[in-house]
Image (cartoon, rainbow, N blue to C red; front, side, top):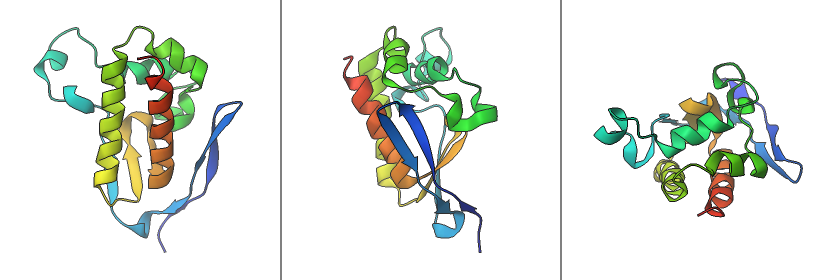
Length: 143
């Protein structure tokens, strides 16, 4: 029997929790999502200039509780108030597009385990999609 990850709750605000479902690593393929995503992952403009990638900046601004290398998803404070602060100086439309592209990658795959390097966490597919949908909805309010 393979390694099994137990369920737990990710509290994003007093009113919102996301259940991080457990999974068995033997359930099928794992989708690895790199920390450089969206239309700028291979764009020369973002690689060789001071122009910042909105998704990268979003994660940098919400990684306030600890560091992802230590605490994984728990290092990020992604409640509505923190999202407002994180997006105020970002290209929000591009950020939403990037988050939607992340979601598209997951939906295009049959993987049941999603490994997101930037968050240093492995998610059950359904939990990752719930998290991404939450982030898209919260960020879209600021377009």
